[in-house]
Image (cartoon, rainbow, N blue to C red; front, side, top):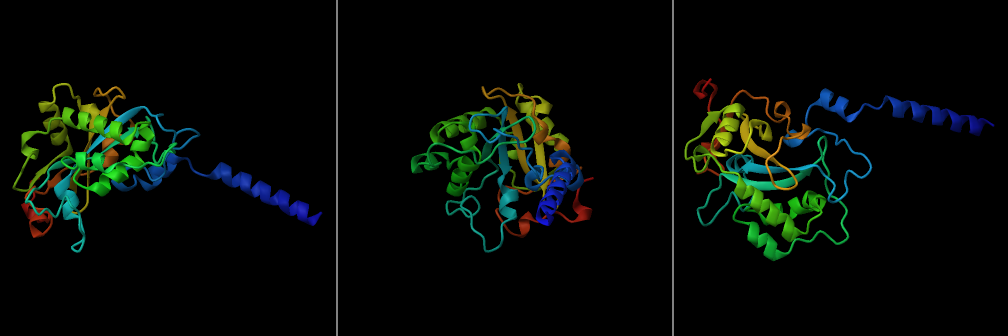
Length: 263
């Protein structure tokens, strides 16, 4: 009888704890966004990690100099340590299938998510890291419902659809800019792009420009972004530091002193 009473008491405690667990939105409000501006807890539900089941794409363009400036001194990455002297500005970080709120990732597939070497080699001009190409398909591409070949065909097509403003093409001097200015710059050279269809992310020393996210429908048209691209979560800074393309690492990429920053 004592053992039965113990089991009943444990059941009551478990049920009470389940009721008291905070929702994902409450956790987000309490702890803020996770790495890269994403919420620390994905709002998951049955079927939300199902390949091909998503609402829209987020095309993520990473500012390569900020990434390279953040590498450890003894770290190595092919996009930051070039023997051919090439340096990158915006690169394709990835194409992320998104729900209106929350996102799928690492979706189960019938076959092992293997990315052929020919596909990897074909992406290195805009996605200059074999490891990144492999990682992005396994984590995000599997949720598109597409093969690696088709996923990266779509990725390239959407990447080429976004024109980069001249001031970000090959800057050899660091500068500062506000998130709103970046949005205006992109809208000004992309006539079909609206302000609510992209978002800016920043972070790190000096609030570096980290990435631009441009939202597309499943059919490949610009569309309004969802909750995941909430600009208030991705970059809270009034101004961002933009490292120059000429520097992958080193002192030239350090943020300017406070008295050197434009207000």
